[in-house]
Length: 620
Image (spheres, helix red, strand yellow):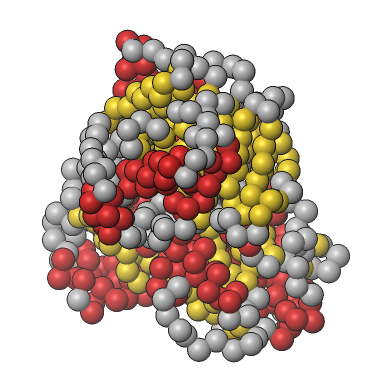
């Protein structure tokens, strides 16, 4: 959730830390702070609020150093205040650190440390780590160790991590060890960038872009010691490790706003390209199927699969619901979609021939990672559909499929959702052709998929119409989103988008289920958004729509171009191109993204950084 940045080398650190925190602000924006070692003293600057508040603080109270750490916070323990902001100082100023994650036994540790005389200034679980680290450092000094050596600081951090229950990404500096950063991870990502006599650090790769192309992704229970003299990586239990250096291919332009006012709008408009990227090199027209390079499971094994479990959280879970329809229709494989946060604690019956797919944009979602690890522990082939190269889930899965959507900065996911649906469509085609989907049917699907990027470009032209409609509905506090079959998950996703960024209450339902209770909510002040493109059940959805109108509920309809009947029933209509039913989620989700975006703007909300949310949910 929170963002971490760090640097040790030869350049002035404050500018790099601030730039990195700005790039990481999508991960947390309740408060921000930095710490540097300046003239052998730890200097901390931190402020509640956005990174800009910290920038103003540094303008009036500057620091100068070539080593430092920074943090932008998404609050878990304690409110967003100056005191709860990171970095946190431990003991009598011997150590300073930043932390991502959640320490589950922090209350017991806090009580123990207070008994030893340590004074707490915040309500965070993170300050416990700072004081515990200072305590172990003090104990090492009592044993005759030199606090200015890397070995002593490393030993103190090792002892500290062994007492922590929960997840952590820790980055620490020590007053006496003036040219060294030591960091450790367990369940919370850290990425090291390698420069010439310098090292960069981030909780993801975004602060490193433009500074280095060589990176190392820390694994759980690894500790890295960074100084201008070099880098060491040590596993807490098995000793020194040889770093696996990977190439960071992302460029800074990928994360720039360009001519767009917000990242969310930019990412909505990037969907023709991101869908195209998801399909590039994966359509085999000769064999009328899809092809993947990273599944790491041979076709013979795949033919034995008799059940698929898709597990995910949030928007990715909605994409999984679309995937369930696709896989069962094309591949005829029973498919189940599980909330990862529930699956990790359940013990569902799963045969040896059950295959598990985790779906995640970031590849770091804590619940999804835990669910995947639990399934791997039980021996199931576990694959990932993921966007971020080098992420924990991408590295730990048995195989998988990258989205290639590019960085998604807006907290409310847009292009990742449609990319996930695209990849799931390819997967359904691939597994279907292995079984009984005919070659003509496969060829037809491929041709329709090839046309989708241009169809999405055409769909984006509904923007102005949606903007006008949004002005008529932005003052409503409650919405219902309704769709059937492939468009039921789209209704759930549309409702989630509106909740996330406009703070309006919204619920998604299968349209026919309205009669089973939710119709009691319908009145003149509760608009219903109906997703009603042409298809086999078009007349059924129209009947559901009429039930709403009979109770004076306002209706916004998402309908196919040329549909004149819908104009007689709905108050407002947003037209989209007519496509096959299995492709409708790629098309009908676009106007719902625009609708949430403009309603949020009209309500004065921050669409890229909505309250209480962060992009990557790396805590339970």
